[in-house]
Length: 318
Image 1 (spheres, rainbow, N blue to C red):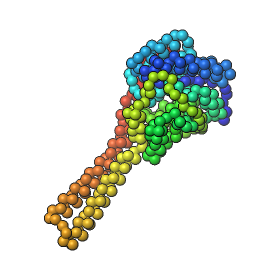
Image 2: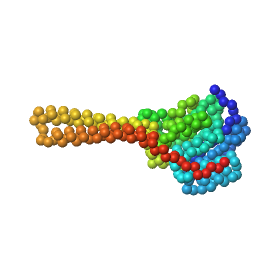
Image 3: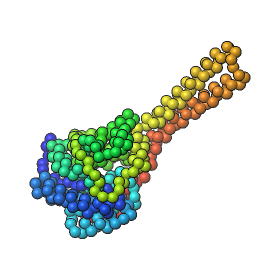
């Protein structure tokens, strides 16, 4: 079902030490928003919301300056650094109170902002979630391309439902954001949670650009941490793998027992060797099996019971 046009759009941009890119980013985003407003695609009440994730440079001061110069810019300041996913969620939950639709993107503008028009058009066509998907990874090194594509395949293999080559460049309607608010897990991985929401979805493809300035905030260490968070927050298959491994080792102990008995009857055994080897394999396998079974329950409890605040908002510029 198509929607009426001229609705309120918020852009939510998490920022961590982005003082080098903010001037150019804010200028380009303002031009894009004014272009959409002039064509009556979005309301004049639409905003650009920067979320400061505990930056150590002048990022927050620059956001305050932008807000003072133009009410188009708004700011959310977290009390401390909580990581990209939590900062993004904090911005989304703040923006959903005022916007009809929200688009999340990174401050470095590697994601092509010219496709924002397509996001909005698909929203008016009735989509509640629109994913920005990279059409190719030609700007990546071979190592990054190999590891990134492997990450998406492993996530899906482990039981997680993620959109291939999609990061956090997406549009979500107010209805979708209200449903996202019902997901309370602390181990946050939005790329896997958002597809769980359902509703009508679509995809917009784009080419990713080079970073405007500064260095990437996602070095290999953080990428690996994100991968671990993604797998553990979406699936308990790693724990089940431990159970499977324990079972296989236990079966090996049975085979070793049979082998030892055969060797015994053939007269090719050493005294004490059979009992020692069988004991080591059997106990080791049973220990892994027990740890896996206990871990199955602990993993589920871990995901459900912590209930720590995922972020704390110190200040909102409106």
